[in-house]
Length: 299
Length: 287
Image 1 (cartoon, chains in turn orange, brown):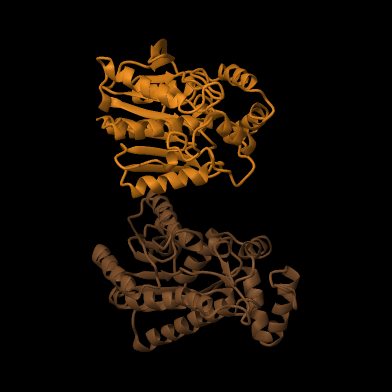
Image 2: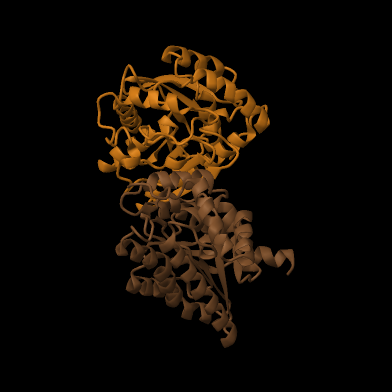
C-alpha cells in the first residue's frame, strides 16, 4: 500500500531542489561533520505521515528508532540500514522513509544508528547490523525468519553483506529490500556525477570505509560475495544513477544464484529516491511497491 | 497493416537472440520483451547475459538464458533442440553475435582472420542452419542476420571483418531467395548497422603490434553515433515490414549509396576517410 506524501513536489522541481543541495553537501572538500549536520538539518523538512510513532531504543550496542503505525497487520518487522556512503546519514535522515514504509506495511521498521566511517571503518557497520538483527530476533515478538533486511545506497550494501553472513550461518532473513545499493564501493563510476552523488565523494567514502581491509573482501564489497541461498530480494535502481551498472550486475548475480528477484529500474527517479517519499509522490509509490513485496513474503 | 496489429504481432512469439549479453543484442532482447515475445538469449559472456535476462524478466518476458559459443557447431545444434523443446516453436532468430578485429592483411596472422570468420560468419551459419528447420516448422518464421555497414563497403584494416560481414550478407540474401523459391513461411532480413555504441569495438582485438584500446577509443569517439536501442528499434521495425535489408543510421545509408554510385570511388573515399579519422595507421609508420 502506498502512503501518499502530504505535499507532492513535481519531479522536475524536486530534481531542481535536490541537486544543488546534494552538490553542496557531497562536495569532496566538505568535512564529514558538516555533511552530517547539513543532512540532519534538512531532514526536518521531510514530513511524517499521520499516526506514526517513533520510539528510541537500543539494538545491540547502538541507538535505534522503532518507527511504527499501528495496528499491525501481522508478525514481521524491517531492520533498515540508512544510506549515506558509510560516512554520513542517521535515523533522522531516513525517518520519513521508514515512517512511510512502516505505514505501508503496517509493521514496525527499526532504524539503526550504526557506526560510521572514517571513525569506524568496515566491518563496524556490518557488525552493528548483525548485532541489531540478533537483538531483534531475541525479543519475543520476532523470530529470525520474520525480520526483513532493507537499506538504501551504502545501507543496501550493509543489508546485503549482513544477509550473506546470516545465510552462511543458516539464519535466513525473511526478505531483502535493496534500494540503489552501493555493493561495490571500490568501483570507479563511468560518469562524474548523478543527481545525488558524485564520483569523487564516492571514492572518498569508499576509502574511508575500507580502512585496512582487502578491497575484494565481501564485507566491504558484497557484490563479490556469495548470493546462493539469499531470501527473496527486491532491487531498485535508477537508470540515471552512478551505481546503475553495479546494481544491474548485482541483479544478474542474484538471478544466476537462483534468488527470487524483483528487479525494478526507474527512468525518472534518482539514487535512493525513496528517502524523499515524504515529498515526492513517485518516490512514495516506489516505497509502496517495496512494501507490497515485503508483505507478500511475510504472509 | 494497422497500427494495432503492429503492436501485438510479437506477443507470444519465440525469438532467439545470440550475442544478447550487451549492445544491439541486449537492446533487441529488451525491446522484444516489452512487446511480449518469449526469449531464448545466449552469449559467450555469462555475466552480461544474466543482466539482459533480468532486464527482460522485469518487463514480464519468459526468458531462457544460456551461455553459448556460436562457433561450437555441436553445441549450437543441441541448443536449438533445447529451445524448441522448451518453447515448442521458434519464430524469429537474430544471429547477432560478432567480434571486431583490426589488422592489415600484410601483418595479421591467419589465426586472427580465422577467428573473425569463425565467429562472425560460421557463427551465423551454425545458428541459422540449426534453427532453420524449426523456423520453417513454425509457419511464421523470420531469420535476421546481423551483417554490418562493413558488409556493404570496405575499410582499410577491416579485411577480415569485411570478409566475414560480406559473407554474412551473401549467405543471408541467398537464403532469402531460397525461402521465396521454396514457398516456405520464412522471411529473411540482413541487417547492416553503422556506428553503434556497443561493446564490439571496445572488446575488439587487433593484430600484434597495434593498440586495440586506442583504436576502439577512436571508433567510439568518432564513429559510434547511435545507441543500441535505436538500432534495435530500426531492426525490429524492418523485420515487421519484412525488409530484405535494414541499414541502421543515416551515415550508413549515405555510405551505402556512395558505394552503389561509385563502387571503386568509394574505396578511395574509405581510405582517405580512415586517415582523417586516424583509425588506420599512417602509411609507412614503423611498428
